[in-house]
Length: 336
Image (tube, rainbow, N blue to C red; front, side, top):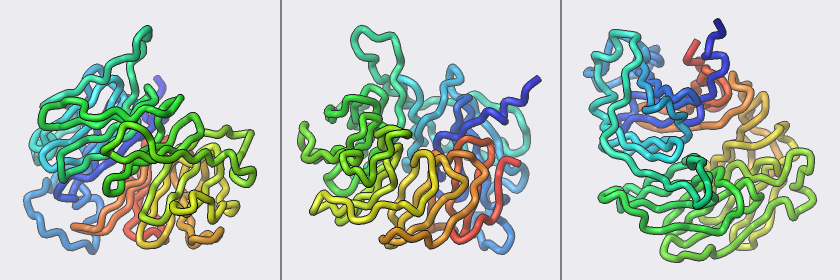
């Protein structure tokens, strides 16, 4: 019998509100909870003494074994994007010291759900590929497989806004103040004001011959923004854009990859990963500051936090998760 873990792809990760647990979701619809206190206890001072001392991880199964594409951590609920569905799970039903004492996979107890309607003349359910929660007004933004970014009011579950302008499915979204940016399989990056229906501007990275990679396609797999910058990549090369000029300032020829799926801008440093042996830390010029060899062949998810301890977790096309307490090196690997 083939061990299914060797075909596991971890599509999403998030941390519990207390920061002491890492939650991952995979293509088999399994939610895994890792007790980071136990995983990283060497030399780390944890103040929360109520965490489970037994058991390092435990698992839940999504309804209908639906693959877990995306997750967000709210104060009361873990929010999960699946296929045709977004669900909320009360943290109290997940973070329970009793679960760590057995290896049985528990059914996931759903507190609420939001259906993503299928397009007319289609029987296909819509993937919820990416989620961003605005905690200030309790609005959830979802980038979906029907080429649309939805805004949901979580108080009532209603759609408050639809951002429609892409011609293919959404890979990635990011939000800064009143600006939403979305990256799509269609090769475009669209900027939206959350108060408007139409997009404000459109960038097609593959229109630049230095960025275009015909052998990999024009898709944009990830985008992230600050007030001044946009970092994006996919089939197109990883590139840094000046937002005010809407022009590429740096094209990262130093990065060896067959497609970018993760981009981050943190502390004036750029991070990127995807179908590559390495996860990269980069300067604002075409220079590698550091690279970490990854367990997954392709990295689909990178999450980081500062408190109660500093940690970055890398996951993707593997059951293994690389854990870094300093992005200059890999501290440990979970799932082994």
